[in-house]
Image (cartoon, rainbow, N blue to C red):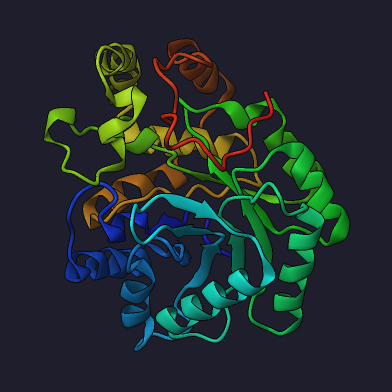
Length: 317
């Protein structure tokens, strides 16, 4: 139904540094050039939906769009608030549709669960949106296998997205397997480890205010230096194969299962092209085993989220 690779559009909102609408539109141009037709955004991605809406206004039907609701922010403190109540979800979905300039999105996720609202009740709300023709499929972000089973018992879930990459492997402990069993697409976000699984030289001291990584444990010392050292053999292996680290990381992700559709996030057309090369690279058993040897499960130093970033993501292991 969609391309093997999608595009995460959080970067359009400046999550990893300032950008412009023109730069984002160049990246969307590159999507079409590469045959990438699956976009992922959210109501809290601060203008990302409007950037996409402005682009597709003259290109209706060019993309299958997934967006998300369930998170809002306190206007005074900017603190995240989780709200899965029917009236809130309806309001933010209508706003998303308006900003995107469409009457329907192909996939609608609950961005984060509100613990006080049973997931069965949330599914009831989403099923009504589907019956009204506002959404095509139902999805959840950062949920546990147990929650997925409960939701899927009410109505089929189309997709689940969680952080998943060579350095964030928790979904291997049940979620990827449960998705396969139930026929649910698994959508890895941040498949490039928020930039570490690329050729770029990162310097956390240059991250601007607002960059998600600025206070992320894996990008703070001494964790960051340990992580860069651990990644050196993988990057050398990619070079020996005639590949970039990003290309190899995407190829590894795709090889984890036919039901996986990674959505690397970038605002750069060149970086997107680098990722897309991974779709054409088939990794054999020996290559997968060597990557596993170089970057064994749990190699990363530091938690994937800080204490402030973690709430809302369901922990199950």
